[in-house]
Image 1 (tube, rainbow, N blue to C red):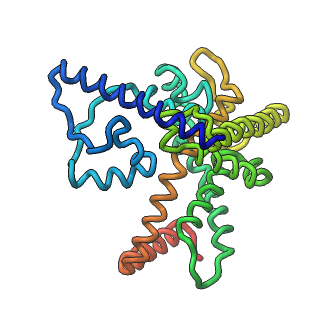
Image 2: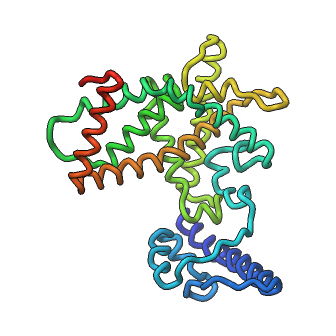
Image 3: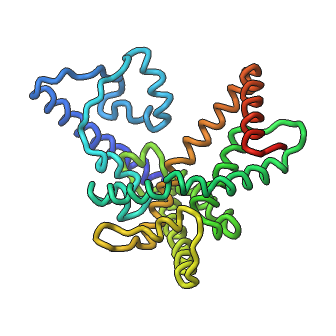
Length: 300
């Protein structure tokens, strides 16, 4: 049933996209703008099918033929990123006006100040040492999987809180996985299309809200204060004095994790891969780290 619905909705979505493109072309021609080169594609649906199969592959194939395409601002950031709203939730980031969004970005800035980050160092070291202590002296590993897992463990402790890391990690990790898999190419065009991936995304968002609501309520009732991003968001207030709601806190945490998790894991994986490929740089990096650890008191 879901497949039939998806197949039926695809032509409608493609038609809407085509209508938008035609409108943009007409406006630009009237304004005297020079149009960028266009990807050769099928009539009506254009390059939508190729985009849905893999936008990165499509870009790589077309770049040598078309070159750099000039950027033209058509929609505002809020409109472009509306596909994030079902994932992050209502009332946060791209579901609010610019003024409120800037206040929420201020919450992020406060939570990531140098003095706050310094407080996370011991937790990061503990997670890394515990994780790598399970490795043997030799063998093969899937570098991408291992670093992704280490980063999500570290983020759980420093961002999501002790309660999640110690007691709810597997549950929360699975829910974040459903959120992540709910961001598909079709989601950019039709974020509320009733397909299985979107349904799992929506259910995961509801469950995460319930989990964090319990943690937030527990901290408030016990008058507890932790050193993590969750605590920063709990204590954050808007300029008018209004405190953040449980739903807003959950959305901000999801946004923070999504903002850093992928870039961190990808950067770490490629760094590790290149160092293993170029052993001369690996030796130099290892020696540099040994000098730094010795300088700051880490002898082993």
